[in-house]
Structures are given as structure tokens and as C-alpha cells.
Length: 340
Image 1: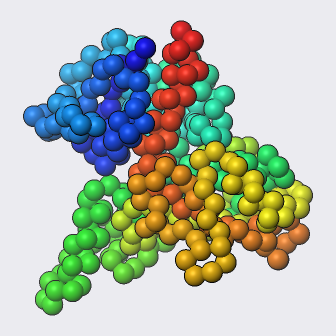
Image 2: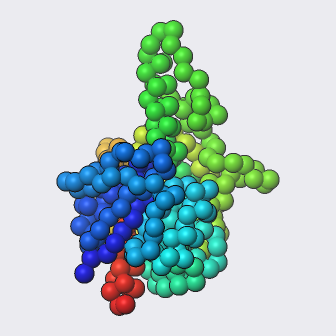
Image 3: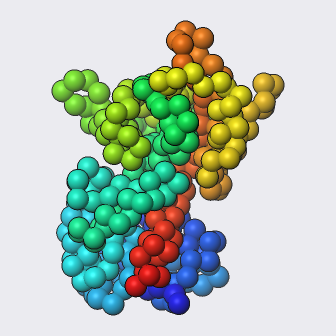
């Protein structure tokens, strides 16, 4: 039996990727609908070997549909997600709107699949922030073995995390630097992103952290364990697709790097590429289009008794957004819809 599935925000980066992944993974959908604002009416989007007409989300009737994957931002989600949920269509939302609501589960299927049962409170499930999603896939199997006390993470996040306009900005600025007399001023970012790094993602909070950094703290606690202390520095880098993270982990007990490597080799959703030679690791360029989160540079932290350092990389449009949402839909299908 197949399901009736909606993708809201189907003309954006993440929405298109959701459709691609649904087709690639042969998600059991008997009926598919692609939604966007009325500005996109008349457009078609690819779904496997076919095209779907884009419908106006404002006019769409969610009654009779099983699952809606939302990739439309918090403001529009606040308007349309409750309407879909109230009609009986379970919403899997990619925005930050519901992530910190105690009545709404925040899920990474490899990490906390049992949380899916929490959908019953509001008929909505939240998808985590892209930088959090890849990190917790790495943390959870290590936490199960040695209990994590503290995480210090520095992220190197690609411009696709800010949308298509940010990718265009990087491209146009890069071209302009090689064209004498041509100048492209920053628009999406506060500083030039081409050949630069910007230690600032999302707005600043009173204590000097940014909202992106706060998200990683709050979401890791909600998904993995509220006892884990997390501190983050989030940086935008001139990479089109693929987020990278340097992660320092302090455990309650000693965990040898060799054992950690084997734990991660067996962990769902993780691929270990860790050779101590030139190229014996994964870069963001290597992960584009891949489903996995890649772990490299796994090594003891010699400055503390129970510490490890590692490097992890993932395609942020996939595991960080679209893939995780589709995996939640697959989990929901198995755990809820198939059971009736």
C-alpha cells in the first residue's frame, strides 16, 4: 500500500532535493503533490522520470493526504502546518519553528526513532538543523558506549544552507574578483563570502553566541541527551554544498580511538574514511550527493583524560535537510501508517 505525499516548498533547494530523494529511494507513494506560493503557479518540478505541476499552497486541501514534507520557512509553516495537521495530514517540518516545542518530536531516525510516537500530540514532527543532524549521527553511538560529558564543535558551513540566492552570491563574487573593474557587493551575507570565512550564522544573542550555535546546543540535548554540554562556533565558508565540523568530545570514561573508529564503522548512516595520509579523509566536495555522514581524523585528545577529536562531513541539502525528512517519513510509514 502506498501513501499520499505532499512536498511543500517544492521549487526551493530543499524541496527539490526532497522530491529527488523520494524518487531515488522509491518511497511508496501512490500520489504526490508539489506545493509552493502562487508565484510558482504554472511551473513543473521533476519527480523521478516525471514532472509534477506546482499547486498553490494557499488553496490546497490537505484532507485525505497522509504526509506533508514542509520546506517553506518558519513564517509560512506557522500558517499552513497547523491547517495540514488538523486535516489529518502529518507534517514533517524542516523549519526551526517547532524544533524546541516540548510537544513536538525532533527526530534523526538513526538516533532517536522511538520519538516518532510523539507526533500524536500535534500531528507534527520537526526536522533538526543541518549542522546538528550530522553531528548527532556521530555522537549517539559513541555516547551509548562511553557517555559523553562535553562537546566542543566548530562548523564550516556551506552557502547552500542559506538558499539559492547565497549560492548565486558566492558564484557572482568569485567571478567578479577575476574580472577587472567588476564589483559585487555583499547582499545575503554581511561580508564578502568569496575567498573569505564569516564567523557568524543567524542572529546574535545577548551572550554573544549566535542562534545557529544555540540551535546546536538545544537540539543535541533534545535528540541525544539533555546532560551533554555543548559549545559551538559556527562559521560560513565559501563552499557551495557540504557542511564540515571539527568535533572535540569529552567522555565520562576512556574510549580508545581504535574502538571509536570501529563503533562508527558499524553505526547506521555513518561511513568512516580515516587514513593517516594525504587524502585519507573526506572533504565537503567528496560528500555532495551522498546519503552518509562521513567521519575522518579520529584521534585521541592528548590534553584530557577521556577525549577524542574527529572531523565529520555531510551533504547539508541531503542529511542536513531533505534526506532526514524523507527518512522520518519512512520511519513514520513503518511505525505508524502500516500499523494503522
